[in-house]
Length: 115
Length: 115
Image (cartoon, rainbow over all chains, first blue to last red; front, top):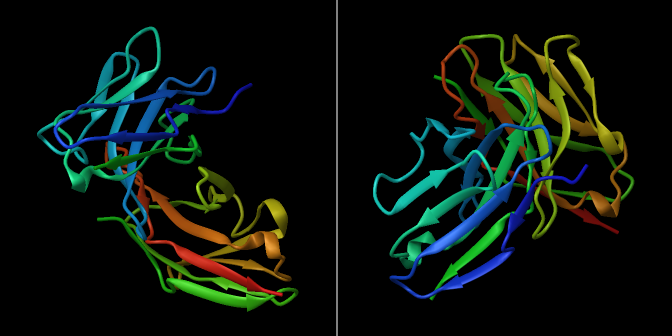
């Protein structure tokens, strides 16, 4: 059973370009979470999705950021018109339920650098 | 509101000596608490979790944590540090009974292990 797969591992974008980050949850997991980690900081919650639904996007910036988890395929975090401040590590996690006492499993992250 | 505070940003120990990483939480409900470890440029790995079944929780790699409700603490310990324990450690609280899933991460404690 493969773990949570994120790709690419590293992504370099010029200011103004779009960044697409992909996350394939563990087999059997229908709950996906995205987090952002700035240098020397902890992870900050961005969005929680189930298949085809956004459950909680309260941690995601209102502009330029969007997320989806289609019926088929990976979850996508999309950042339009990237700026230098978007440079960070973006982690995806998945779990089989929304039970708060169940741990989430994390991918290795995508490190986005905006130049 | 729920929150988590890691009391030390850096901890340095000698190999073979005990490790103590401190975490205090704030929660109106019975909390859901976790410790994760992050090695450089890697994803997060679950060390242990508190599920209210027992106040002393044993995890992987010899780590354990004790839930103390009276002190609102969930400190992580290990009797004898190994060089491979050098990493960043995150104390995490999952919200309970709030209807959302804004997992809250502590700011992290970086553990250094000296030979």
